[in-house]
Length: 572
Image (cartoon, rainbow, N blue to C red; front, top):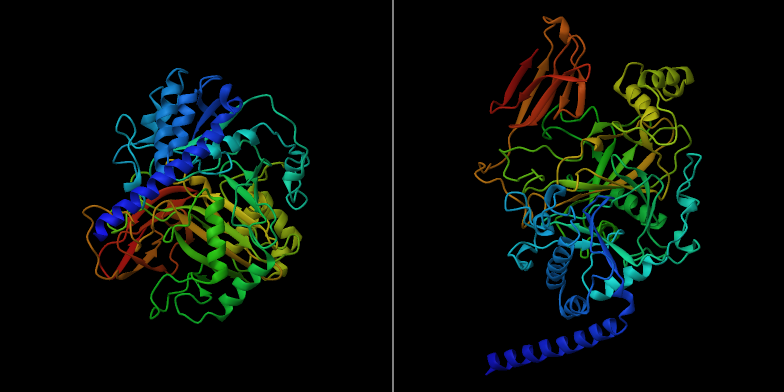
């Protein structure tokens, strides 16, 4: 009897939900003027150039009414994929996979070998041709799940706000002066079109900036700070994609995070130097990262910040396990971190599959939160060492180093000449760098939209020349990270009981003159030190399968992969 009562109750609720949804749909479709001449312009995820357009007047009553009847986001996204794929076929679009003229269906479903399996994979509904659907986002990262949202972004598209504050011509940083772009004067646009960004099944949304200084108003955000100020992005770089995030956290939140970090006593989470070995190893301190760091994974403010950042990135719900927790950083005088990738090395021997270009998961986005002010020319920037700054003439590293020595800035801070810290300061003054100040937040991607590692995302923390720098960062993954439900596994990889560290010793014998300028790198990106001829070896605590590289004048000349032995010696 109880079972039949439950079925009747569920049936009644389902019918009631359908009736209510139908009424809402009829309200949206009653005024047909908004879509009668509508054109939907479709972009591939993260790309500014569109791949196709439905054409004006192609959106019919039947398509709109059908979208209005769907009761959840998965039904809606499948219906939208079906409808747009059909409409785009009449436009000779290039919305297929790899920008081909194939159907949009082929872009949305990349196949079993290239589609990460996310937590809601079983909720996806197949399209008319039995493929996985796309998810569709507005330019600002709103996941489109209802007909009402389509109507809303159409209404917004007809208003073109002035962005005069967003694109200064003199190369200055106007971010502080452009507090609220919504106050710009709008003008009515005659073009009845909306732009949707198609994200394939298993992938994550990427913003698609067109120029440095461009503004993205995130007026769909629901998780605001107590100040209630609107959150928006300002483009700092196109390669790599780097953005300022305005108004995403407050001074009070920053103070809370720092206070909790200083009070933390857990060995795994408290503020301390980065290590490369076990607590019993006398080589455990990582000499090329002299900052201190700790983690806040469960604090009330940290959780609120994580949820807010996820919404900025395009998530409609916060997914526990898709981030590493909030890492709190303290940089004292002269402390720094050499250029490195947040993207973790891919290995076939690990149980976790880090190959995000296929079915694996890795860090794909980093958000940096700066919590203190540092005087002008006092270092502490985040530098993207492969990128050039916009708005000023490019400067060679050698010229920047000469100017640095002439200024005496590094000498006054106690930085030794010919040290890696001095090299870092010169890099920071010649390449694309982001200056820290209290309340600043910066987003950049470590992956391309297709999951491949973005080689332009190489970045480092510049030495602090005066004062202290407090910051925090959040690494976000495209899948659940290792150890969490749904994390991608390497098929056939051995299951390690407990990872055992190996002591690796790297030495330059001096027998080969071509190796006189050799430098040691971890995974080709993280500089470890110079391999001077006939000098003591460089040592590192590392793990089986890790790759180490020797470079001479920037070119790779030798690769080593750590084996099973507990102590290993590598000589050039």
